[in-house]
Length: 373
Ligand SMILES: NC(=O)CC[C@H](N)C(=O)O
Image (cartoon, rainbow, N blue to C red):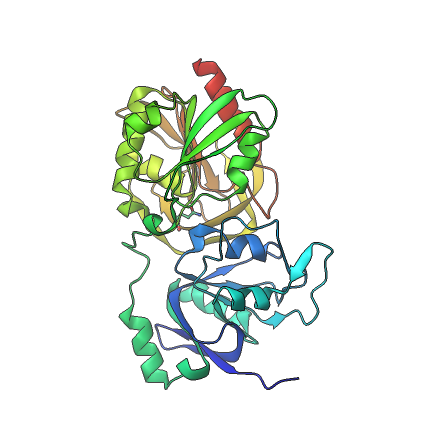
């Protein structure tokens, strides 16, 4: 075995966790967050919503199934860094073509292994998600120098990041079988599985850059508009919020996921705020405020829309309600308009990896579009 390179995960409040370099050597800066998913590290690392975040996996052993050519949620790894406890020594899966650290190195992604990820998680749970950095090899410096580098960077509040991850050019994902609907999807950091879930329901998805205008949307004569997930602070997404108001005003059916839920909330005049440490995992319970039913959901969000479970409120587009809330902390997990064809959820019905409890929400979108015809 070759000697391992020392590495450090440095938090802005001065807490330092020491381990070994994992993936690329060097340094990275971002917001440190934890995810409780036991599976799905490839999907997590390639989810554009994790842009500028250093993800800590609470599952102790990571990398067992290697890396394959099918499960990417976008073109590349988006996390700023990755922290794990015990990396798999011998990944094994018939789908795997390389190991996780090999892929991280190939893409220049800096990580750290061999740290007490439970201690990191408890720290973040008490103090909140905060700025952090991973340093290894030639970048490992004195504690003071590393902390200074961490605190020189920006935090997640006020971070305008969707522009970094959106598509440069529009593209189309064809329906599987006969095309029944056309949807314009605003790409704020869309995951590959979303158009795939739509395609299975006869939807042709036109993925548009986040700068798309109402007339560009209208030129597609879409049956519906979709607002995707995405990184950063929703309070910075002014263009998407304005476009959403125009879509609502035009009465075009609208469905939003995660960042999309936050944007719909802001378009309805609600505020968004930063949660202490967010919700990230694949088994988070959500209560439907209309039926009382619980769904186990995949989530990845650090911000939330302000509101109370089941709350009803008036908007310039008619009545609206908080349709779902998180069973763990009561945070808003969904919105529904009662007089305009629009709804959104803070969790991931396209969950990959994740439970499929929420997949029928794509059928609700199809129903909304059928009724609007
Ligand atoms: N997955 C997402 O769309 C995340 C939305 C937003 N960036 C948040 O952290 O809350």
